[in-house]
Image (cartoon, rainbow, N blue to C red):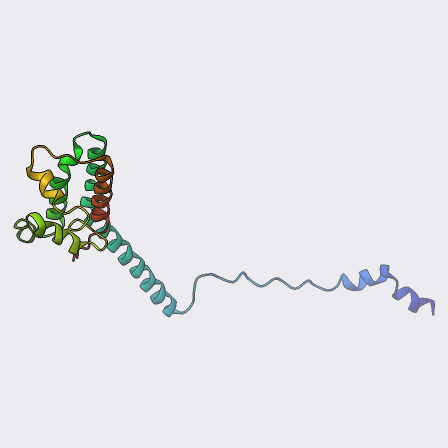
Amino acid sequence: MSTTVETLKPMSMNSMLSGLAEPSLPENISWIPNAPGWYVVAGIIICVVLYRAYLAYRQYQANAYRRMALIELDKLQKHSEGVKQIPHLLRKTALDAYPRSLVSPLLGSQWEQWLDEQCQGSQFSTQFNGLLASLSYSPKVSIDQHQSQGLYAQVAHWIQHHEVNHG
């Protein structure tokens, strides 16, 4: 019996395990897809992303006139006589966005109504009725600070939000 007990001792267990070979680990799984369909899917995704980036870049370029007009409006707001240049800035911005044949013939109340039609929430023909024409053609126009700030805000709103199909 002593031999049987000796074989079960931990010392003898190690000698039994020493003859066993440890199995090798499997290779790492590759992240590269094996099926060619995944390459097609990846190609389509890349094309869609590039196309969306191209459209965003074109939209950014098409709205350059808006950014320039807002910078010019900010300069006018800092200048004491800048309010008199607002009609000129609006006309210039409209000519950048729309065809000349559409914008050039508009004067007075027609101009103000057209501005309102191109931008939702614009109130040139109601809140500032006749003010743009007065600023354009009258040498001396009295406008208070509150009305001036409202006009600057309205012009900024129109520049940012008028709807144009850049095609």
